[in-house]
Length: 483
Image (spheres, rainbow, N blue to C red):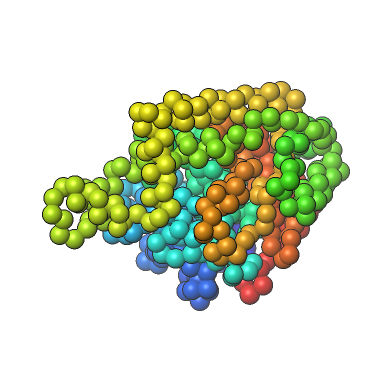
């Protein structure tokens, strides 16, 4: 059962081959057996899962149907879940039980999805390796000595190891697409505003977006269908109709215009990954796509702009964690200033502290114009580059990451080296565009992803291209040894 995709589970439940309760028990037992190797979960919700599974079986017995009805999933541990610890991977929120469900959690629960637990993540979603978590690093199931990517590394590792068919993640600078690439999954970051951020603990509010992680584009379509939609509780949610993503999967790629930016193939890209990306292009050409070289001239400025804007927003968002209202509080503070200083110093890990300090500096009176304002201007130039490109092509294709997964601890002493792993993904967040990573092969036994970007609200186009590619390749079907 653990090898079934979401789509196969939906068919199996509809055909009464097994019940949601049976499937849930199998997966909970599998998590208990295998997750100690991976550390992909922070909290398991066995009682809730079995209650939801029984309720889903009853709904099906009463004639209800639906692709997510009875399907087991997990949530990245920054989606608030009522009465359940929502830690954001931090000591600061280790004792926090959310008083309400995030919109994404509520929507998926209403669709009948079964929540198996909350997955591990980089602390406050800050990291590219899932090593900054208060609960310890997550291991990559393809090689337990390597990172799974971050910050949604727990969700990615759990799905890649077949502990469950799909999970939610969030993407601020590549945190769905990068771990998807490093663990051989399909991961989708929707258009900014497509999925509600209400109840999703913020890192950088103008960049964060929730999305699905699964083994196939077909499964991502199913999960995104349950997540997407307008939410009046979220002022950045966009009131745009949500199409039937599964219905568009089988469209022809004949005449599809694919742009390949020349800036993607610079000295920083592993040449073996470059070869796999070119192979993916050839495969799509066989399916009728037309490929042309394009240029994104301001891409070189993306990392410095992102690492000003994101920490600036983080320093503002994380100011609410002060030891007063909720979360971690230091022992025996002598006064209010001591309470603030020690609660934050003891509650936040080093990467979070680093980004808060960078952000506060960039927003300070003497440096706002020189750093933050200039970064926002670069952000506009990057968006303009994409808009010009999409006048010529329908999608943009390139590598998801410049390298395969690195060894645990290899970049801990050099944060900038880890930041550079986001070079291909962060532009989509700065521009608010949808992006998808899909499996494209292996380097030294480690997975590699190819990234697709599309115009605003064209998630269906990305899923269609990825699904057609997956019908003609088998990279996404490979399973890590031992899982």
